[in-house]
Amino acid sequence: MESIWREMMKINSIQTNNVINAYGRQKQYAKGESESKQVKDKVTISEDAKYLSKITSDTDNIDKKKITEIKKKLKSGTYSINSREIAKKMVESLKGEEKE
Image (cartoon, rainbow, N blue to C red; front, side, top):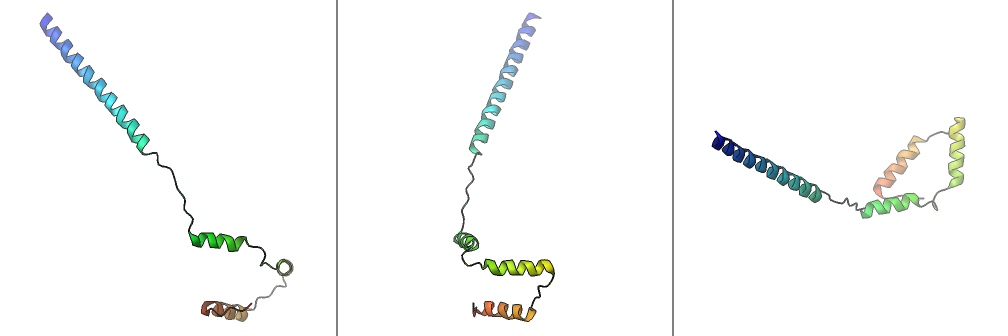
């Protein structure tokens, strides 16, 4: 009976060691995997985006007096829209015939 007990202890000891080793390998694998997945983000702004940012932030070309006048007309309800003039300007813009 004692020899059976010793054999069981050997088996249990081997199984325990296998479990501990497997756990250790899994822990190392998970650690290595998480370290390799840490990638830094990178943002690149295209030349077109830089150009758009520049022209939208350039306030030298804005007629503040005209904007104030339009705001007042909008608020009072007296602002009228000339749809023919808008359409004409759109066509000119598409053709590249813009006139300021």
